[in-house]
Structure formats: C-alpha cells, structure tokens
Image 1 (tube, rainbow, N blue to C red):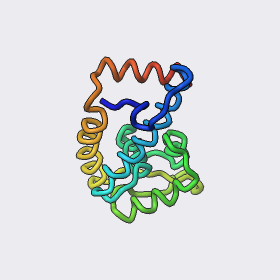
Image 2 (cartoon, helix red, strand yellow):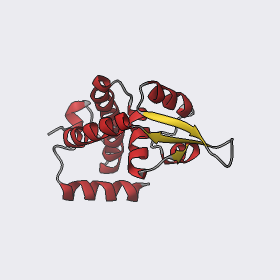
Image 3 (cartoon, rainbow, N blue to C red):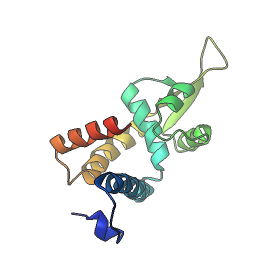
Image 4 (cartoon, rainbow, N blue to C red):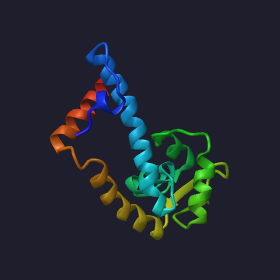
Length: 145
C-alpha cells in the first residue's frame, strides 16, 4: 500500500493537511491512470464520461443535459462529441420540435465499447478497495464537499 509521506517525501502539520494533500495527489494519480487506461481504446477520460452518461441514461439526451452531468465540465464538449461521432460511438440528431436543440445517442458500437471498458476500468482502478471501504470513502468525500 502507498504511503503519502514516503511517496512525496514530506511531513505534515496535521492529519487534515495530510488528507488534503492526499486527495490532490490521488486525483492526479487517478487522472494519469485514466489517461493510460483509455489510450488503447482511442478515447480520452472526458469522452468516456460522455459515453458513460449516455449509457446510464439509456436514451438520447440533449447536449446541454450531457454537459450538466459531466464530471469535468470543460467548454470543449462539442469537440469531444465530434470526435466520438467520427469514431461512430455516438450520433447527433436535431429535435423535431425545436431546431436549436440537438440530441445525442449511443450507437451500437458505442454501447459495445462502454460495456467492455466499464468492467475493466472499475475493477482495475478500485482493486485494493472493498465495497464497504468504497462506500465509506464516497461518504467522506461527499461530507467534505
């Protein structure tokens, strides 16, 4: 198991300072893990997030709804979706009632990709944490926010 003090060769003034530094350090570690993990699939973590949102919804969603549900709300959501369309993972179509509204839905190829990724990603990233520990961690992070 990792030891933050050893990993970054530091001592901390308090447990709260150590916890904050640990959260930031772990966030960076997760980001690097995600980038490496998704690279063979030809997608970014943000593109995976779009696919995950659409898969969870089980239906087409407005672009604005996807933006609101994204973990990392970057201003380049349209560009992310353009890349996913080019790879045939999602498709875009206009609303019949309002031409200003655009819907996005998963293609069959996108569904297959998200299903194959989800199992491995969750298993690999959280392999050292039990279900009870994951629930406790999630509760603590919610409490922090």
